[in-house]
Image (cartoon, rainbow, N blue to C red; front, side):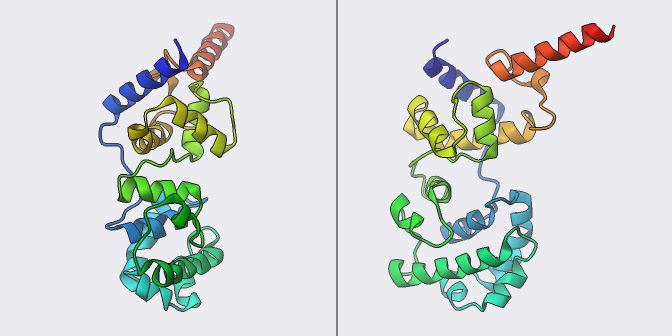
Length: 223
């Protein structure tokens, strides 16, 4: 099977398995998604979702956050990894939104990436989920690992993985593809205990076939 054919089959099967795949960072508007995504760097979505309700209650918009005291933001997000640096980024981001973008979240990768605490990955998350603009594929640890196991990329660098996936999948699927691979990584292709025997992609996945073969050999040797 050609890589392009594999990609389409992977997408079709995952779409059928996870028709409700979505961004699992809780938010109600683009500003909240931007802030939540900044917080999610090297932190779980579950932890971020525990922190953001109180954070958004105190600082519901860029105007409030831009005027916040650093200590108050730190206190609100202190259970998040690197909370001190992220607190500075949140306030700086809000200030730049006010000064440069009239309090609105911009809609281009370039403008978003210029905000404190924001890189291409965060920009892709915000554009794809808040504005339905497919500018790229969000490559987190789950996407990087599952796409490598599936043989969709041979790279480990997230930017190179993203480029490989963008070449294989249609533009309109990029945001959805990230969600599907993240759901796969969190629910079936779990890093420390992959459930290959239950996976809908096991006949397509070189990684699954290798693991299942090893398990079969191991069972034979223990008899």
